[in-house]
Image (cartoon, rainbow, N blue to C red; front, top):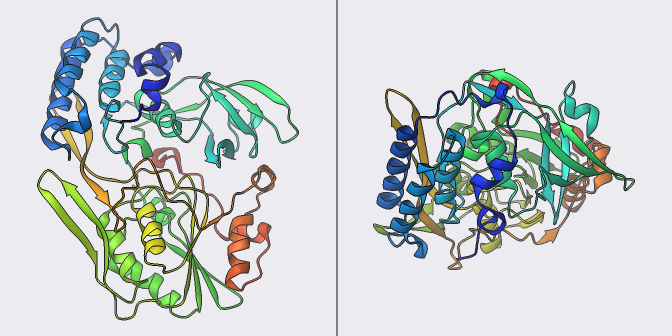
Length: 435
């Protein structure tokens, strides 16, 4: 089993020791070791009972548990104890198995979004009226965050640490501008009351109609009989996908934009597949402790039969990756963009409620094997046509990838106009989800 970022670099607990947290943001109160020990036992038990591979991919789980017990015995804070628990789960090197710590009474908005593009990492958006807006800019290449170089192999874990395990009262960043100037900065996030929702734990808040609309599929017709459909999330039912299909059938060519889509439910994936294939599709085989279960999508008799292009990037994850790979394997259309991240497992979340706290664990309950006999986990989808935005595109709000896809489909669309089709929307703090 390949070593994970945390194991390769340094233990999570050690990372936390180097990532300072001010008293204002700590909210640790008094450290109750017995509470951390209870959490450890519950989390370890859930993984041992429900993980899809009873052999836990070769990890000696009892030895890991014993090792973590000893670490918690000498932990000096709740944060460090939680780091030890998270590191134990990280030893499985599984994208969908992770610790969900007790909720905090606050959230932090760092004011920036970053993304890996190819093998580099860039600032893609900066929230107005934040400290980040003064110091960094879209198009800046991110060279380090708290002395760690962000890359495909660790960017999700960095996000997990910043947003779930140990929110930071300040973040050190080194960036390089388009002109080549390197800057060493300290970014101060905004704090707001309430629990933090973030993609690391699959916490997608839709508390208001506005928040719900932010994730709803959106479609825009272009000239040349081309439709662009932005699919931000796979979490919708038949009615929503029927609307997409209805619009698609009025056009000869459809571009499905799955960039930044973190995935969602397998049921929602099945519904979307059925609307773009004229035959039943074996999406994948779910391999679990109970055996192998084929996952089928039955064709809709009104399925769209025209030209299909699917856009993906490093933010395309889980069931969104599966959809792109199904299109490839079935030779249904062209996949364009950047390689996806390779976070594809079926998981369940288990929560424990007690008088003192609430915590949980996400556990992979099935490995999803595609029809070519391979899993996408840690591999992702390699596009048929590699198309990457440049730093200049990001800095000047251009979408050259969508513009190119439109041109291939038969429509005229400038990179500037393409970026305006689905402008980035910053969520309100209480809807903060990270994408």
